[in-house]
Length: 151
Image (tube, rainbow, N blue to C red; front, side, top):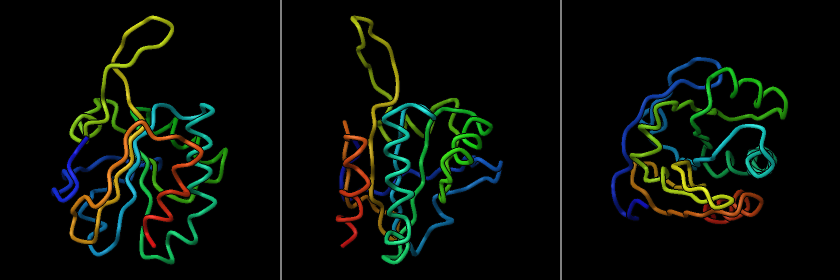
């Protein structure tokens, strides 16, 4: 996991509408940057909907939410539409940004070992510095934790 107090790695990725978004676009705002394994899975849906539910309060506190997975732009669009998600979902199919943020790790499931996204969330301040970092995040609890961290 990246260290608190370090500069967040820069990135530019397409969102669910194909619009390229960069971390620099959000200078002057706090950014909740969360990495999740897959669109339309139980945990990822709980997490995304939790952020959507709290999005008005997050915005009131001068912050934005950005979700990143290796799913395609099209998959993100379907996910956004199905659940009415009000924030950008960024597509990183080559997992370059996912790796830069140390969210690509060895995982084990049913005795198989493979590489994949470990649910990770960062809070980045207005100047692009990481002020909170959480890995092995619990999907349902994470949106509330991040809203609290903004207070």
